[in-house]
Image 1 (cartoon, helix red, strand yellow):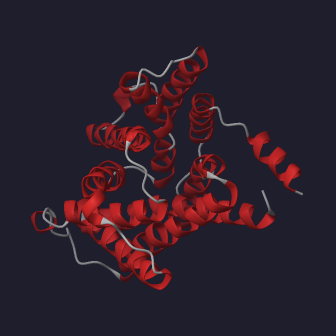
Image 2: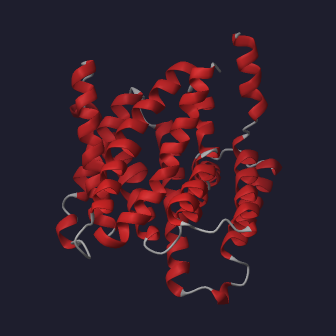
Length: 296
């Protein structure tokens, strides 16, 4: 991996890690449905601009069913669930819950595709569960009902990503940029009909407007384009390692901007979740270093 690719990887993690901060700012004011409607619309418009500039087409007639499924499972539904959770949970916890997606992906793959579930995968699953338990506190009696519901929503979002990842492996191959561009427009179609029934809770402040613009343009449009550049440069598997850096930035931005406390429980729980995820995905940071050495 070149220094340029490494810089892109870190920048992407920083951008996606900030999405939980922006949701935490805007969701309590706009509500999850309105917020995500604006986010996917802005992201889709940004990618449309890139598609026009780069002259990249979108074969909707051939792939419309695939895009609708992906737009629901990989965008509209998990985004909305995380935005709902953001009304209650801190950005740091949201970013760590996001890291459970590969764990759910392994479970779905085992149930759907009959993929062998090894002892290593089982250990990763148990560690993931233990990490979440540490994060929320083993003694559930201390939590409010709203907190429990929000945590379940965050985990459900991870489940959606897991289902989407397994589905995408079985679906007809679609060019990556077209996948992102088309699924964002599909998410718009899913969200827009529901938006009028969930109006904003209050008038948006300047900070909320900035958060919405950042979510749509930066965290959706720019991040997707950066992600696909990374795939072209280093391949899909190494690019997915960005998921291990997102919680680091999620916790960092939450602490720096919203003064969220970084407790020992957050650090330990987050590390346990990431180790569990690494076991299930087979991720080994040394692989990236070896690739960098052989590329020199």
